[in-house]
Length: 160
Image (cartoon, rainbow, N blue to C red; front, side, top):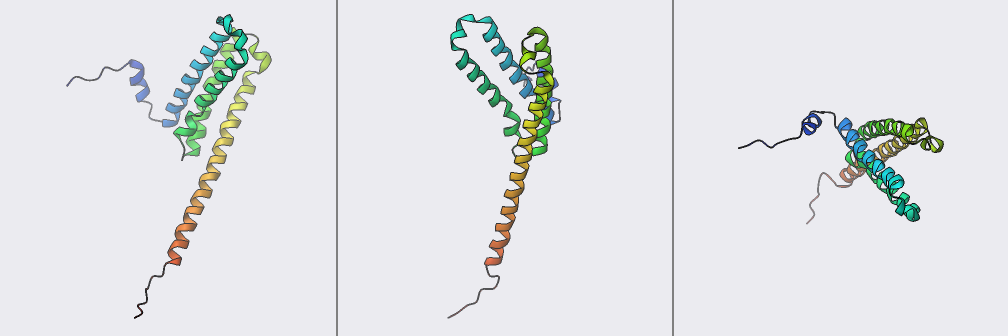
């Protein structure tokens, strides 16, 4: 049987054993592609200027959905969620800083440090809220399982 042909990138990517790193890199690649496409549409297609509000809203929504990849990948592991999100956001911040050199008006809106703090705080809050939710759910589950055992009698009396 012939082996499947793989791209060199896929071989490198499959050797990444840390799932947080792998998901963070995938998220960064997806979001960077979306941002590059958005910038191309903004600066390269002047015919869409009349739809600027809808264009920016749809691009922002797409980017937010892509940034939720770590959240859905690590639903039961808040620490990995935070690490993965932080890796993706750090790489995205580096990409933003590079884009600032190409587009000088970007830094007038937000600097690279502000972008990084925004993402790190967002992923931190999501991870903490998710951790608290998991703790409450586990506490409720343990309480229900203990109260369910206490309510059922261990000895059944037979009455005739």
